[in-house]
Length: 243
Image (tube, rainbow, N blue to C red; front, side, top):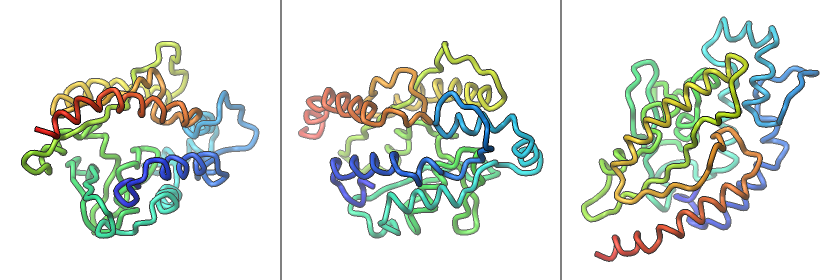
């Protein structure tokens, strides 16, 4: 979104409106009426419905449980640029090819499918087809793509990485299959980030605590944490780019 419209305030307001919208709350994650939930995050809804036979059936006969078209629709709602060529700032998106597992940088063609692919969590969403290939969440191979940033940076450019990953919450012990898989993913991601962030010239790490990637309950708080972390690093960044 920023690469198309470099106006942080405008983007913030647009994202907040979408997170509060009916469209986001009804993102096509399977939900059976009558299922009790501790909270309303979409992963919690998914975890709750795991106990239902309808999801057991789909999990046994398919590689994903959610509709990838709904994810693409969400991207198109938030990002209206259409194509990489319409962006005001060059952008590269990391995504992992299925089933080879190779990490790719996508920088041309349609935006919505490329962005959706970079968000398509394996097991939740089906791979996204792009130019005959199939792609999934880039975080599988690169949680903090600082190394990829160095690959595309020109001489003299500063690679700034933002690490918004969190640690597993010791008070949130998994009690079901989906929760256990999510915990394992968090542990893998924690150690992967520690390695990847070393490739950055400057690292920004907002104090997200135990807030997980699927928790959208306090967007204003998380945005402010990011802003505070960026402002703290601003003098160092200005010094680096003025050399």
